[in-house]
Length: 357
Image (cartoon, rainbow, N blue to C red):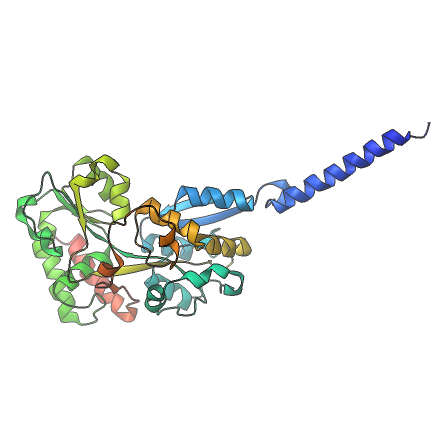
């Protein structure tokens, strides 16, 4: 066999070098085993994840984000509790459930030293995150409240309070969310009580208000379909989240909808980003949390869902839309807290509302 020529040697070396560079590039682009892209498994609320941010994260990090959705904290918690290894790398519980999951050892400790964008978390969000003030297990994602949406073409001269659901003129045209803390919290706030009361007499009064005055006028309690049914005209008055309501309505028709947070307060929520115990892609989950809070990226969340900038200090600089409600309105509202042993009392009140005629 003859020896290879000089040109063949050079060509061979070039191929080797090119192949090495290609392999290195692929590895930097988030390749997993077998050369497949690394995947980040995210479990978030419906209507809550802006596609633009997900797509830009995937492109920048060379990974795939796999999204699953839940409609309530209870659903999310039950799914994670049922399996010690749910497969999710990132979940978005509300503050009261962060408390529960922390206490039950369901969350990984977060290495905040790897996230330089946490400097943009607002004082408002930090003050409300009493369950985890140092962000050891959670990072605030969004702080907001549910409100009431009204089709103004069909509904006239209405009370802009939680007691709108007592208006018998609109029986069988109204819906409230199938959410214990939200509905009971609305009633407690309307009566002038704390949404976290542990006073049995106050809770009973709220239960009776819902059961006797509000429930008879409702089509049903609905956690998932309230927005679509409101958009279709099945419901004229809907309790719910602004982002869900307006997601289902053509923007040209937004002027026909009055969405408001009733004066006097109500339950407020803070949703957080947490890493479940045993998450396989811990470092990538940290990168995602940090990426979300880069102001330019967080502004995309605000624009997509018309949120006020309740959690990120600099995002308003980059936003292009007007929010559906303001931070000043939110300041009247009260964060839902972990009820501890009083949760049993709330569950009992809710069961009577939901399942006893």
